[in-house]
Image (cartoon, rainbow, N blue to C red; front, side, top):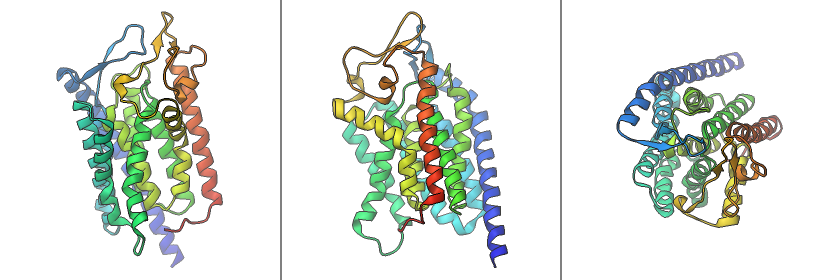
Length: 323
């Protein structure tokens, strides 16, 4: 019996790797055509952290969403027993992605985006354990809302969002394997594959930006894995860089619309400098002295790696979470 169960776990892990490869391939080959289409449709933005302020395609996160969807389809097809939870997860991520697309196109207010993200997270309730209370049920779409916003807030530099997403998915995948939750690794590996492919085009110097459609689905994936895999504490640890950034911004400026934020400036030598006044953030903390964009991104990634490693260590230590 144990041998049979072990074989099942190994098969799931193998399929998770295949999901990652398929998601990577789909995103990688889609991105060049998507970038051209976005540029032709004038869905572009200025890279304000370069002296030359080049024009870069926006909403590239559509490619992440596409690759993730293709990868998840493989997992859903090969494991009928997991179809329900995987389909619900995919539905939530797709709905969150749609909210991101709308926000990229028409710029939703903070209240509108929060409401829509909460509604997008409601299907997650369908996979809640039986006999849980109303507070637990509400916490599921609420977690999607909060996590999505957090991964959307720590953004703006070439590769920073997709790189942190890659780090988070690696940490969560390793934690899933350590805790024997190979079924949940289907989700993390599909997202990891899509993010890795996107990072090739999003790294410095970026050919494409993820937009809200890309940044929001990273947080939604973390929230979904936290509940489905019963690893909320580990997910919280992995998300700590974003939480710290969000706390700094809220403490220093409260809830402020994005267009009211004064951006960092670029010196003639290409180094970034924080404005004399304005909100605090993790990026601005790393800019206590002027630094080039790549260095700042590496600093933030290093913080993500630190908390990701801590999450993996906790996977060895923590007992299985209750529902």
